[in-house]
Image 1 (cartoon, rainbow, N blue to C red):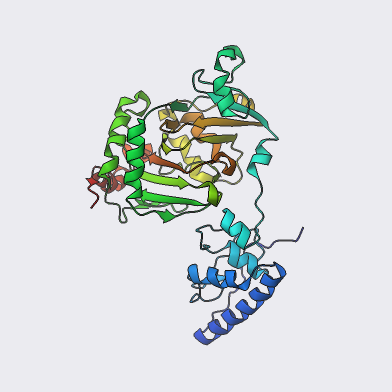
Image 2: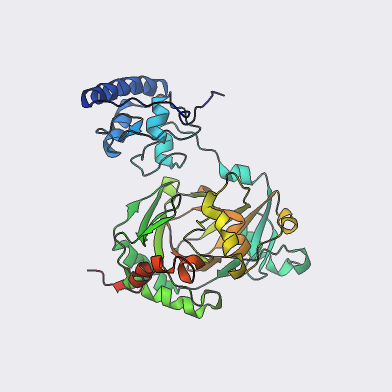
Length: 389
């Protein structure tokens, strides 16, 4: 395997390029890149289209952005094709390790199959009626086999709610029509999104209002209905994000834990169109501070479900958990399922157009803690539901 280089070592001085030098650098970079493109059997037209759509023709060089090195760790910065294809926003919206079918084909990016990896593990699927995990990968089959399930053989995992028929068929159809009346933005991994919420910087833990002005009035009733769900009493939405998954794009979402600095315990999803599956795997700490999980200790006493002990968590080693997400259903992750497992949507589990709306609340620091005043402007805007013209 070729050795990959990370960030420049400390003390390495980066040269400052004058305008004329930048052009020369860019031209030489394109020449080198075109040679690499030939080696990768990727047509030069695709490369030029990438540079055009990613709007990087006027940056300092193909591997810098306004003088700041954007080569990520573990990237091969000697390979311009890697640099251009992986470390810029591609025309499809993907960046870095995130890919869709389009960029995988156009830029010869090999995508590791998460499904194949996960199927090497022991699969358990959540039975909605049992409220327990039962053996099996196929969530539909597990639901059908409910009458044969033995309670003492099921595996409990606190922190999962699946409420079927949260929306009626007519409500789901109207909600999709209303969302499609609004503009969609391209996102990563073949998705599109509509985001209504504040601007957040998870790494720097900075919050600002940005252009947030509230939510579409046509979606107001969904938030109001949360009050009818005991688990969601007192839930105040401060971000609402529509997500679209198209199988033709290979849409998916990679394993992750939702940020723990700004987003609160209850991770809420309303499925508006299409059936799918949420896949959970135990989270293994890879780097200190990832997902801001270190902050959970400061509000752990306020969680709705206590976190699992190390011994309890060991029960899930070598297992992959599958949670059905039926059309028109409500899904809530909280407690252990939210904080101690990464969740993902596999490409293979998107068999039709899927649209869902994700809802987030503040963490306790912004509700009744030291940062309450910082959250006030966002709370004020979150009370507004504006009419679609």
